[in-house]
Image 1 (tube, each protein chain N blue to C red):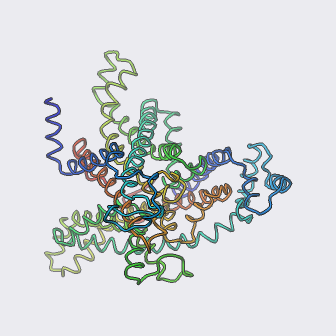
Image 2: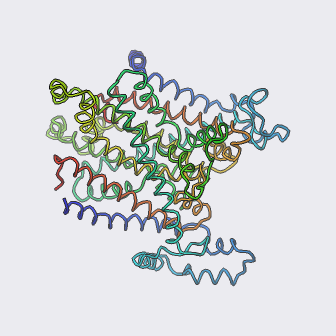
Image 3: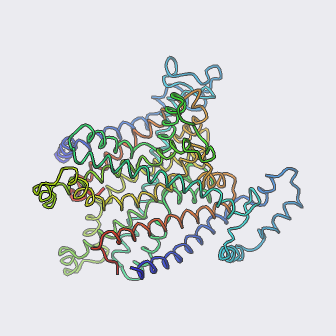
Length: 310
Length: 282
């Protein structure tokens, strides 16, 4: 197990290196002079000022020199200087990452609970209205674009009913989390409800469930102990894999709700041609995504002793 | 003629496929005949006397800030969405199939290289990958084709490789080889036909994903630029008018959901027909 984790961790390094290299060359061989743009963002740009910026950021160096400088700085934890804010990219990201990760965390946890419960009840009472509703809702939840679902929720709860704040971070108060995390969580709820339902339907006809019933255990105990615990394993995989997608969806959801996270940062940086910030955001997204996937694999191996990675 | 008849029979007997085909066909017809269907020009007919008018009357779905007819803009938007869906997904399918076939047939170092690249691409979520490419290329419709077209091929590639590896070992391939068929002939006549079915299913689903990615990019402001009437960018503008003119953001979203639902149902139906075994795997 430990050797498996070590090997997977070591694989991350070449993956990231190739990814970074491709991104660096893609982003840095492009039309549009970064120094000009940076100068333009300040008032009263002059020839001299632009020349200063070029020198300060090393924009006159050949591309391969800049590439190795970039890698070298990266090794020291320096993600570069933002063209837009003239502050360190690492600091910029650190500020936003917390807002994004808490949103993903709240949405992930909340939708796992809701999705599993819905699917579990739908499975136990399959054929009922709740079952039909869950299955139908799951299909709709996958086809509608995330940002539109978010806007519709905002329209309904903030504009029409006026019970929840429309957008913003609100200093991290709970009410501000509700709409963004529901928007972010709907696909996961849909997927989990479907998976749990199918899984429950598989388990419900197993011999050990019949045995448990026939030896006189209460229905509640059978459901909790024999059905739920066995139906739970596939749920973890789905949940984990979906966390990655959720991370990507934060970009759109944060834009909808003006959430001050990494997703908003990367979009602003792209629009303002802030290449160091774009590179930094992509790096952080990649690392988070890879680590999440690794965690799911490890958790899965831990929970199911039949799986052994060699 | 008989073939067409039996094809129609199959479509009729599969409700998913039937519904999906009808919806998709409808969107295609709207896209093709947009100039004749739309009551106004999507961006030239700006009428400042009729800004932010609610749905009904002269403007069936209302107007936007510039007084442009929302319905006409949505009708023309179908062209953008379908174009991105079809062109970008064709690029994906072409790259994925060629690389997957090559990896599966040649094997060895080439296989390692292609699968290595695939895994690196998969270490970023598709939307982030597309965002990164858009950041490098800049906004615009052609760049969206490229960004989305180079994002999703990994799934096709893995699928094609897997299928190729299975089919390669089948008796009929061995038979073809033993009677002296050339390598290229074996690939084009014996392996490719068996790979294409599943690829077609994934490609159809991919059209839906491509449409969603384009809408997302345009919504974020890095995709198509005004005055191009893309559903995503209309919605993006509509966000500011959620308090005063909510119809601007409601209807384009319905159009996207409707189209994506249609294409997804079509893909589900195709999968049921082409590969019943795959049915439970979603």
